[in-house]
Image (cartoon, rainbow, N blue to C red; front, side, top):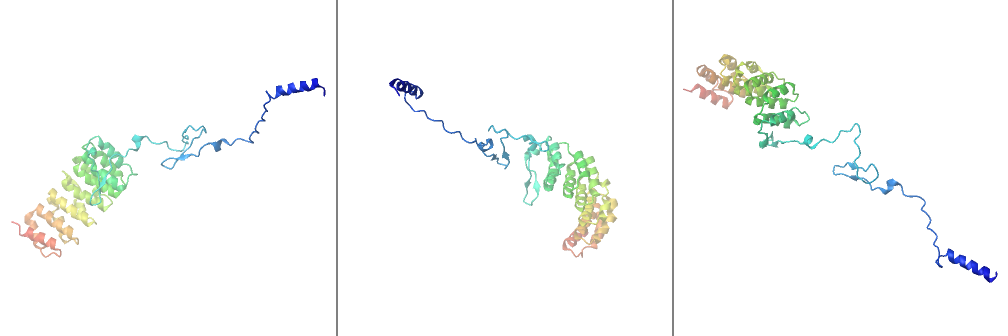
Length: 287
């Protein structure tokens, strides 16, 4: 190679090498990029255990749409439970919150009372709390009573009627006295003593009730209400096998006709139960 050719090749090399620096070869491309799903962080769990899923893959934290069959989350006002009952020393539930002493709370408590998803004890406490609202509740309570399946709730409803207006109370008590459950009949018979006009109810029929507590309560209420026409029927109960029935019958007779009651009491001073015997002695010797 002559000198001219060598010089030409040297100049071309300088041009290609950019002033003599070596040209680095590019790094080989990676075989493949990681899958998009591998780049996303694993979905986190919320406090309730549900997954917070970023469904669009962009990391924006968009909530997954609710499917057609899934219930939408309830609004805060829909899930507010309102006042809750507290247990008494006797184990019964009672609404002690003063916030229920507001007429506007009557429809609120009635709505909860009609909600059968509430526990039975809570619903019974709701029925007992209704009179404290001072609102309009009695007529609606009687309607609920006619439909109620839970006997404990029915008994609480009937007991509340002692503080209801007479017309509604009498309608409810008539249902209670004819109830299939002995506990409800007992509450109706007891409550009747404090309701004006209850002497017109079929209390005398309950003197023959198969439940001893109901017989005793019916005798007591008839005496308090002054139903003198029931004297002979009540007098028959002094021979009842249940001591509480005998005691209530004796006391009812004393309220209805003290003179005639002394004659009955004279036969009971030897009663096998000491409480009944003492009551009979007091009535016999009363001035």
